Length: 196
Length: 196
DNA sequence: TGTTTGTTTAACAATTATGTTAAATACTAA
DNA sequence: TTAGTATTTAACATAATTGTTAAACAAACA
Image (cartoon, rainbow over all chains, first blue to last red; front, side, top):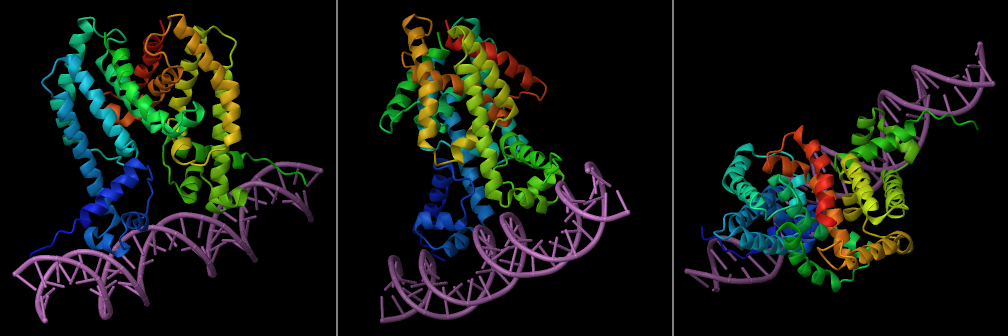
């Protein structure tokens, strides 16, 4: 059989990811994706047979990547303080690379896999919520006594500014060169807002 | 001419708004909108001629509503503290009613009207940024010394949790009845995080 | 009651996106 | 060099969406 790997299949997938998750073009067509990848539209069908299948694969990989990120951070063997710092660093990096990825999962992927979510909740989220509770009781977190509110705040502060980049730039008059700098500074700001 | 007003034109517009801005169905068809409004698809074309025109009108009205909200809040003759409280109240109410409205403006409406934005910036945003600066210097805001970072945080904390409702519900195991309660509580949490 | 306006029905044209197929080229490894 | 794989080209079928038109029906109003 000896299937030669030219990397084109991966190129198409990566291009789709870029279009969906970085550029936020939710309704990009197979033609759009083929053009952006610099290949013929037929090739997209040759590798993936249908747009839905390509879509599914891309979303599946995006989910897996998010889970890996949760692994890298929530389950890290670090003090809460360091873990929080690391989370902010890692998630901000990923959010800047793919601003629309989380949003995509929210809006496009309506049907959730109950079992998968329960697994994530039990292995990642639940223990972290418990850690937050401990920190609240220790007086290191003063903004709320509900760990879930804490997590919502954390993710809001990381995700939304990047998501609303164009809105922020125009209304707050932030320049193209300034924006990434502010997102860098933001990491410390978020930490200070949430801890201590 | 004596044009009878049955309110159907408005009904169609309101339905479109609901579908786009509340339900987040970005690519709803004219048929979807007609069905949701309980009218014939032809009628949508009868009133608006094309999907684009309906779309434009709806987006324009959404923008106007946002501007009015800015008027009600940013330009209110209140102390900074009360103004902040009012902003959180008003924006949270609106975000809960139309979670995807801001997002829609971000992702769908790529081309911005430079003049319009400058007007908003000068009359609403700029003076408020100055107010924030004063509060920072007075020591009432400790999280950042950049008013723009403050505003980004404020809007993040208000908008994102509602936007990511389904994600929050599933991963943080928040029930349908609990969620609105938590969004109510959130107003105080946001205020405490940002001020004093 | 008859006319106007609002709304529906049906039929159709045009466009766009998806998906399939067959054949022609290009490339690469044995 | 040649066989097999990768990719392109072209042509086509199908489906979905948009948009138009004409006629029928319903309701209000004068």
